[in-house]
Amino acid sequence: MNHPLIKKHLWVNPREKENSTDNDGNGYAEDLHGWNFVSNNADLSDNHGHGTHVAGIILQKAKSHRVKFMILKYYDPEKSGDDNLLNTVKAIRYATKMKADIINYSGGGDIKSPLEEAAIRDAQKQGILFCGGGR
Image 1 (cartoon, rainbow, N blue to C red):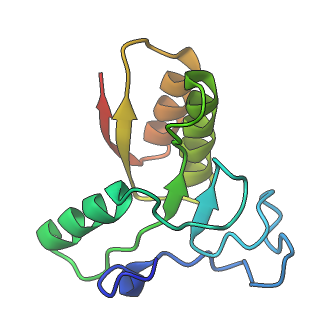
Image 2 (cartoon, one colour):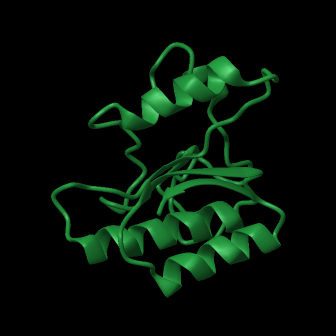
Protein backbone atom coordinates (compact mmCIF):
# COMPACT_ATOMS: atom_id res chain seq x y z
CA MET A 1 0.00 0.00 0.00
CA ASN A 2 2.90 2.38 0.62
CA HIS A 3 4.92 1.49 -2.46
CA PRO A 4 5.58 4.82 -4.24
CA LEU A 5 4.17 3.64 -7.57
CA ILE A 6 1.28 1.56 -6.28
CA LYS A 7 -0.11 3.99 -3.68
CA LYS A 8 -1.05 6.35 -6.53
CA HIS A 9 -3.12 3.55 -8.07
CA LEU A 10 -5.20 2.29 -5.15
CA TRP A 11 -8.88 1.75 -5.72
CA VAL A 12 -11.02 3.76 -3.32
CA ASN A 13 -14.35 2.47 -2.12
CA PRO A 14 -16.52 5.53 -2.81
CA ARG A 15 -19.02 4.80 -0.02
CA GLU A 16 -16.60 3.94 2.77
CA LYS A 17 -14.94 6.19 5.35
CA GLU A 18 -12.11 5.66 7.81
CA ASN A 19 -14.25 5.65 10.95
CA SER A 20 -14.47 1.99 12.14
CA THR A 21 -17.97 1.75 10.69
CA ASP A 22 -19.28 -0.21 7.73
CA ASN A 23 -20.54 2.88 5.91
CA ASP A 24 -21.53 1.11 2.72
CA GLY A 25 -23.23 -1.84 4.45
CA ASN A 26 -21.23 -4.51 2.62
CA GLY A 27 -20.10 -6.24 5.83
CA TYR A 28 -16.55 -4.82 5.89
CA ALA A 29 -15.78 -1.78 8.03
CA GLU A 30 -13.12 0.59 6.66
CA ASP A 31 -12.63 -1.35 3.41
CA LEU A 32 -11.27 1.79 1.78
CA HIS A 33 -8.91 -0.01 -0.62
CA GLY A 34 -10.00 -3.64 -0.30
CA TRP A 35 -10.05 -6.27 2.43
CA ASN A 36 -7.83 -8.78 4.22
CA PHE A 37 -9.84 -12.02 4.28
CA VAL A 38 -7.04 -13.86 6.11
CA SER A 39 -7.18 -11.62 9.19
CA ASN A 40 -10.70 -10.31 8.55
CA ASN A 41 -9.63 -6.66 8.74
CA ALA A 42 -8.52 -3.71 6.62
CA ASP A 43 -4.76 -4.37 7.02
CA LEU A 44 -3.59 -4.76 3.42
CA SER A 45 0.15 -4.94 4.00
CA ASP A 46 1.96 -7.38 1.73
CA ASN A 47 3.69 -9.94 3.96
CA HIS A 48 5.71 -11.68 1.26
CA GLY A 49 5.84 -9.30 -1.73
CA HIS A 50 3.87 -11.31 -4.26
CA GLY A 51 0.98 -8.85 -4.58
CA THR A 52 3.33 -5.89 -4.85
CA HIS A 53 5.36 -7.71 -7.51
CA VAL A 54 2.29 -8.56 -9.60
CA ALA A 55 0.93 -5.01 -9.27
CA GLY A 56 4.28 -3.69 -10.50
CA ILE A 57 4.12 -5.92 -13.57
CA ILE A 58 0.57 -4.78 -14.30
CA LEU A 59 1.57 -1.12 -14.00
CA GLN A 60 4.58 -1.65 -16.24
CA LYS A 61 2.45 -3.29 -18.96
CA ALA A 62 -0.67 -1.14 -18.56
CA LYS A 63 -1.67 1.05 -21.48
CA SER A 64 -3.59 3.34 -19.15
CA HIS A 65 -2.55 5.38 -16.15
CA ARG A 66 -6.09 4.94 -14.78
CA VAL A 67 -5.29 1.48 -13.34
CA LYS A 68 -6.67 1.08 -9.81
CA PHE A 69 -5.86 -1.81 -7.49
CA MET A 70 -8.49 -3.26 -5.16
CA ILE A 71 -6.26 -5.08 -2.69
CA LEU A 72 -7.72 -8.41 -1.54
CA LYS A 73 -5.65 -10.70 0.67
CA TYR A 74 -6.91 -14.26 0.69
CA TYR A 75 -3.92 -16.59 1.05
CA ASP A 76 -1.87 -17.46 4.12
CA PRO A 77 0.72 -20.26 3.97
CA GLU A 78 0.05 -20.93 7.66
CA LYS A 79 -3.65 -21.66 7.04
CA SER A 80 -5.24 -24.88 5.83
CA GLY A 81 -6.15 -25.42 2.19
CA ASP A 82 -9.83 -25.24 3.09
CA ASP A 83 -9.39 -21.89 4.88
CA ASN A 84 -7.47 -20.48 1.93
CA LEU A 85 -10.10 -21.73 -0.50
CA LEU A 86 -12.93 -20.12 1.48
CA ASN A 87 -10.99 -16.84 1.65
CA THR A 88 -10.39 -17.03 -2.10
CA VAL A 89 -14.10 -17.42 -2.76
CA LYS A 90 -14.91 -14.54 -0.40
CA ALA A 91 -12.36 -12.32 -2.19
CA ILE A 92 -13.78 -13.14 -5.64
CA ARG A 93 -17.31 -12.47 -4.39
CA TYR A 94 -16.19 -9.17 -2.82
CA ALA A 95 -14.56 -8.03 -6.08
CA THR A 96 -17.73 -8.98 -7.96
CA LYS A 97 -19.98 -7.15 -5.48
CA MET A 98 -17.77 -4.06 -5.61
CA LYS A 99 -17.87 -4.11 -9.43
CA ALA A 100 -14.22 -4.71 -10.28
CA ASP A 101 -13.43 -4.58 -14.00
CA ILE A 102 -10.68 -7.23 -13.90
CA ILE A 103 -9.76 -9.86 -11.33
CA ASN A 104 -6.15 -11.02 -11.38
CA TYR A 105 -6.12 -14.22 -9.38
CA SER A 106 -2.65 -15.45 -8.49
CA GLY A 107 -3.66 -18.85 -7.24
CA GLY A 108 -4.78 -22.30 -8.14
CA GLY A 109 -4.32 -25.86 -7.10
CA ASP A 110 -4.70 -29.48 -8.06
CA ILE A 111 -8.32 -29.99 -7.04
CA LYS A 112 -11.30 -28.25 -8.59
CA SER A 113 -13.66 -26.46 -6.24
CA PRO A 114 -17.32 -26.01 -7.15
CA LEU A 115 -17.49 -22.99 -4.81
CA GLU A 116 -14.53 -21.33 -6.49
CA GLU A 117 -15.78 -22.14 -9.98
CA ALA A 118 -19.23 -20.69 -9.16
CA ALA A 119 -17.66 -17.47 -7.84
CA ILE A 120 -15.57 -17.16 -11.02
CA ARG A 121 -18.62 -17.79 -13.23
CA ASP A 122 -20.63 -15.18 -11.32
CA ALA A 123 -17.84 -12.64 -11.81
CA GLN A 124 -17.71 -13.41 -15.52
CA LYS A 125 -21.51 -13.10 -15.81
CA GLN A 126 -21.14 -9.57 -14.40
CA GLY A 127 -18.72 -8.78 -17.23
CA ILE A 128 -15.57 -9.00 -15.12
CA LEU A 129 -12.49 -10.22 -16.95
CA PHE A 130 -10.97 -13.00 -14.87
CA CYS A 131 -7.22 -13.61 -15.30
CA GLY A 132 -5.13 -16.29 -13.67
CA GLY A 133 -5.83 -19.40 -11.69
CA GLY A 134 -3.18 -22.03 -12.18
CA ARG A 135 -5.04 -25.25 -12.92
